[in-house]
Length: 174
Image (cartoon, rainbow, N blue to C red; front, side, top):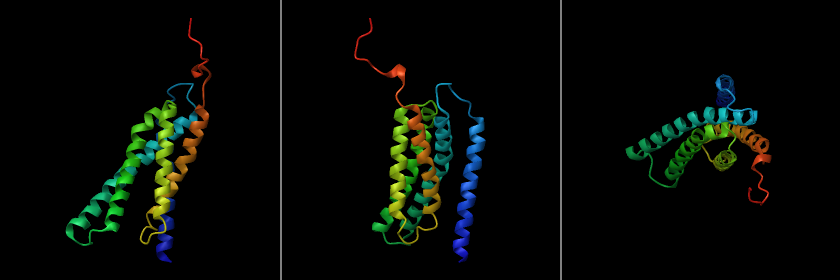
């Protein structure tokens, strides 16, 4: 029972820290244009707020797995490969979030789409890891945080939508 309480406390603390970070970073962001919806600004703040800790988690996770593999503490096999894949997925998801946050901030539809795909695939990967033994302490907080990011990206995608000035009528300008 103590480990369950500790897990809940850690989950609540990480969500609270993320919300505080989002509020602090969001207040520093100035709207880049009046044409860009606030959903895009919120998505860019979340991209940056989730990207940095996810990259760090991926690096630390990969270093720990490499240390175990090189020391011979665990036999090299499918479980080790799965653990390396988890570190790579953490790093990739965080790197994509950081790389695209400026484009999301100005409302670029392609960046929002790529971020949605990255977030969706990362959440699915975490869902596949969830039933495995030994992942119950780390997967739920990360899955919860990235599950909050996906609806914000959907809101940003819906708020940008097709604009009147970008609709082509099929006629050449004269």
